[in-house]
Image 1 (cartoon, rainbow, N blue to C red):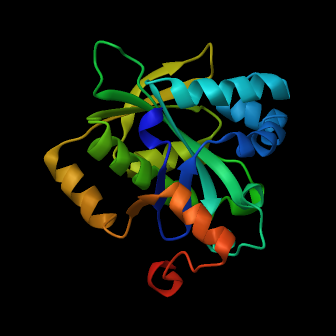
Image 2: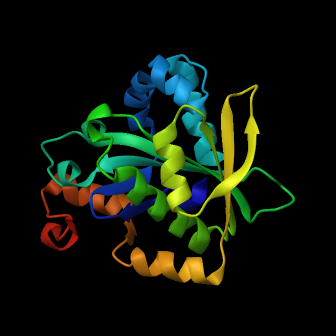
Amino acid sequence: MRLNEDTLLEGKSVVLVPYDSQHVPRYHQWMASTELQKLTASEPLTLEEEYDMQKSWREDNDKCTFIILDKLRWADPSFAEEECMVGDVNIFLTDPSDPSLAELEIMIAEPSYRGKGLGKEVTCMMMCYGINKLGIRKFEVKIGLENKISIAMFKKFHFHELSISEVFHEVTLGLTVNEAFKKHLLTTMDFMMEREYQKLRDCRKDGTPLFHMQAHQS
């Protein structure tokens, strides 16, 4: 999606950046994992196919993708950006007749970053972005039945069960955004900042401090 091609979302522990070609090799490594293929219901692609996918996702108006970076690590220019990658998060506009409906998908690909609350933070950040920038009012998630941790996390966000597919071994959960939920979410996420990705990348190369780390670290 062109809308977010120069958008960086700054959270407490992570930053979300557009999915660029520089991220493809690391992403391709992740998706060679049979565990992640199973969790994301994905088929393995060649590296060339992965580059083609990245280009199409950048152009398509119904896909909004961010790469999740470790904020503290990315603030250190001695680390290449691909070394800071943690996972990805996506919004898919699945129904052309209803642009307010979106499927949300999140993947914490690096095992060492799981169980640290990043999934919760990223989910909140992406929902805020979807509500404010894309006009999303209904979210759905499709989760493998064995992924109990993700199911429990979304139920804490008041997602409720819509359907279960025994064929695909997944559950679909949904949430309709009302004014009370929107107000609570935006208040909870008032620390999130939207910034210019390219400008911060240039600052990073120059060694200019990127964030007020004391203020944003949890």
